Image (cartoon, rainbow, N blue to C red; front, side, top):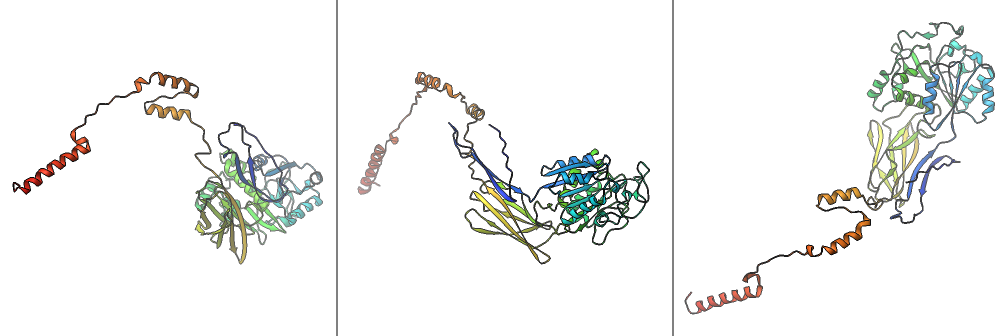
Length: 466
């Protein structure tokens, strides 16, 4: 077996089918398994993330590692030391960023023009999350900056948090006791807060996470903002809102690194990946708010293709129990309607007419608040014959069968010797059998015997002796 790697840079967006073919090789038994196909989804634009941080802290490294675990996300980390550093980053990277992460850095580290550029890019369609910390929000003196209008929470005018000074209790929640992070009623339905499709299991997984070591105090939400997570005493922890065409999050915490240190690395990766995808409006795997997921997009003839139709509102909430229809275009260009059933409020379909190999396309139509949305997905039924695709012999299996039947197994190179041995032992292969034949084993003698008996009986009848 030879392994190889192929690379290609798509120039357009959409769902593409790729096929890998290997020419028939010398002495190859069959070439039916020389071709494999699959699908790849190319998203619009590039998911480029800029993480802006002041002094290094415990929080930034685990966040970067969790985001970098997703190969489709390109994260750039920059440490701001003085005003003008952010402008240099924009100047050296002319390709727009999709998402901005603003860490624990004071507003005094930026010029007003830099913060205005950041606010403008969010308004134009970028995403922004503002993280908590000693020098974030009110503690970083952001009340009179362009980001005050962007933030989902009201940033109070107050004296900024002095460097290397104790945490101020008027703008920060104390870490004693720590603050568990729990989804609100709206947050439980939001994409950002989903660890499990089952609401009860999802809440249990959130309640098991290590609590936050303090948080910034959010006293008031902006009109139109959505509260997604709170502490046990209803401390505001995570809020969202739209700003222009972009999405914005305000996160009061700066100690989710404790999730990783206590064995909840999977939850940490899921949470921060969902943060980035939601801010980039790619939480559905594409640019639309309606999409289809297929359990397996490479099937064998006769397999069942199970798929689900999802819908998400403009504010990121998952919609359930919405009307939807689905059809499947088969390789022969015929169309079959699939009946959808609700599983936990999600329209789910099972398509069983996969007798023919080739490409199948699922088209779903969903309706929400009077708007009709379409989604497409594809799957492939492979031209497979499980017996012919791998005709190679299994010597160990053949040896086991020969032992069970009282025979023996020999390698192919000893076949000539075996034939010679069989020829020399031909007399031993003659089997003698002794059989006994009676009068009744010959049909004509049996028939003559019956005729004699019948004649004798007729004569006796004629003579009156019977």
